[in-house]
Image 1 (cartoon, rainbow, N blue to C red):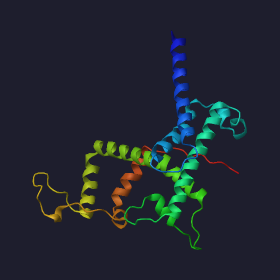
Image 2 (spheres, rainbow, N blue to C red):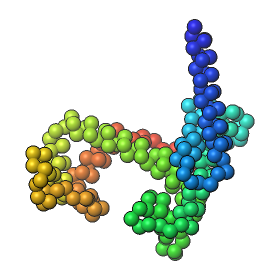
Image 3 (spheres, helix red, strand yellow):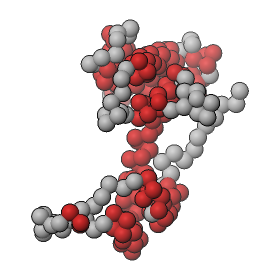
Image 4 (tube, rainbow, N blue to C red):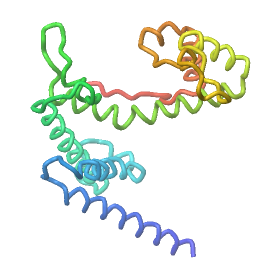
Length: 220
């Protein structure tokens, strides 16, 4: 019975993997347009879905070329890079609306002291970092911060006082028509930098429960 269950599990995984492969191949070579969200999602699944089934040898670049999971990983990463490169090219050549620009628009417009902008490879790498790590690490950190504050009400109160001193008191729930002077403002970078206790709370929470406890590097 256990063997049957394992076989069924393997078949389901193979079917799911085949479906992901078909999704990526279906959109391969297309211009980035309306369905870019589904294409990106398929490429992401193709890129990182095989990781849970990969063996240690699959992470060696040369051997990876000859294993099925390694080949799927490389195929998905190539598809993801193709989609990102197409979006970057569109950002470079298009007109950016200052009120609707996103993070990639900002990165495309950046220049260094010599007036050099980021290369397509640099933009692609930064996009993957924010896409794959930026949102999850931030949400994980916020989750633990709120968890720790719930268990330490005296710290929660002190932090709330600091935030209210900088942004103003929140509107009263019993008086929805209260004056605008009680409305919480939108914090600026300078205001956030001035909240020293907030910075201490965030850093301590990330020390206790780090969203990324370790980082690997490749020596070339």
